[in-house]
Image 1 (cartoon, protein in one colour):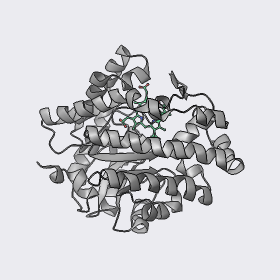
Image 2: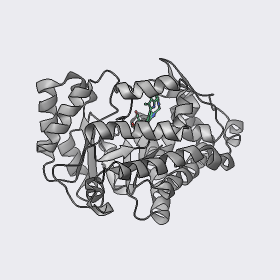
Image 3: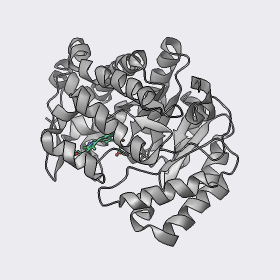
Length: 348
Ligand code: CP3
């Protein structure tokens, strides 16, 4: 199977494929016993992201079990700020913890010159996954590389970790636009370098996770989500014209129309709250849509899962759909429910 007959690449390049290509955000992770076994060998999550043998292995685990149409590089969006020299720790049950970036000295301390060597193991993972997919006969499975979009990465850096509303980040964007703009500029350029290295190493698709895009008011969304993403996509299209880009502006609501029209992405990931049929008509035929099954429907399983899956498949029938969740799979998801989902989508 040549590259253009991989279903995911066909949909991204403009051709609808039915049944639609299928993969799941966070498809490698704690809901899989085989992931937990590897994780137990490497208690430090950052060390796992920087261990090409194990990271490639956990990337392939869900492909072996479910035969998904995409493998997504096993890493994390916060590896990029870490590679720029910003601190990062993952605390059990607490999520990520970072130093709070609140002033110009914090931006000046970021060192893009450090990045290439710090992320070299990630590029080795990309090469190993590509080789592993070919060696294990997954000819239909495309490899997705990714980064956090600059706004979402800035959220974690300013806040110092997760947050309900990212209030400190949003107030900095209003009260000190020069400082926040300087941080965004560093992140835009670093993201281009990071994604470009992944494409060089063999990533066939790139995805930008803007998980907190929807916390912004429209005027700031236009600057820090739409324009920042457009700057990245424009450079990526120049450097890697054959590598499609998927954008995921989570919780964007109505702003998804401007995002689709103005960023240059090839597909837009829709979150769980979107009416997928209406969202698809808002973004138009020029952009594929990815999504958006509720991860909790996958936890529930049974007839609730079947009905929620059927809604998506009926609503988007024959369109450029990439079937996915509306947000990441959660650890309590029974793998048997994932198998049932795959069977239903494949039989459509
Ligand atoms: O399978 C895949 O999707 C590929 C790997 C991947 C991970 N994180 C692995 C991971 C990807 C693409 C991400 C993206 C990511 N990371 C996002 C954007 C998507 C989203 O969910 O909104 C964000 C915001 C992060 C930051 C992050 N990483 C948080 C908040 C946490 C803690 C929460 C949690 O689930 O534990 C992580 C840790 C993380 N990233 C885990 C995994 C498998 C769990 C770590 C573990 O094994 O203990």
